[in-house]
Picture (cartoon, helix red, strand yellow):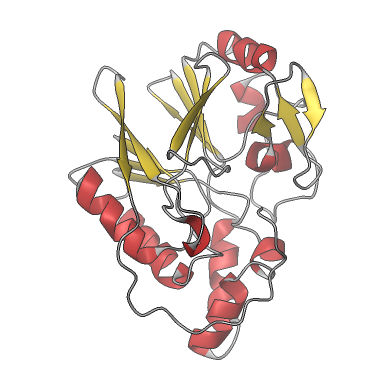
Length: 257
């Protein structure tokens, strides 16, 4: 099984499959953010959805903070749909679909996977199961936190600079893992230059699978492979050659979400 996170970089998604193995020969779990920023968000999300339909038991697609109507209208996906199709219908269909994506996944009852992080409103997995997730991502609350929060070196809960969500310290992640019988929290959401980064004495790992993010950051990407006994390894890779790069006038704010 392989875990990863994408960002509308279609050629890099194809490179990822060449490294991790073709579907359905390999189980894949994607942890959100398939659109925005990259030049080929439509192609990226279309391929992932097609693979999910064709091999529904071999691929899992979680929701990220960019699978949102509000965010995609600012960070590229809406404009890409207008440019390629002449109207917003494709954008509407996909953003309706995003409402139905799961927020979290659990691998063999031991590895908890999600896009963002923990929430002060959530102590147990059953509380996540009880959430009404079929909706636009709210601006605050537990659903927002699962998609937006970040681990921090400081203990306890803090206020994140990203959308007013939270940061959580090692004491929080250790307690959550112990309470729920978990071994690891696997998440995405943050650019890490080596493609993956450990936090909280290996209670949390961040995985970033978009190399040379925004075509300028120079970072490596990584995927995490799990064998049948849940032993993990990381495969790092660089960006694939870019083909068909469009001329795009950017109107996005100069900061990362």
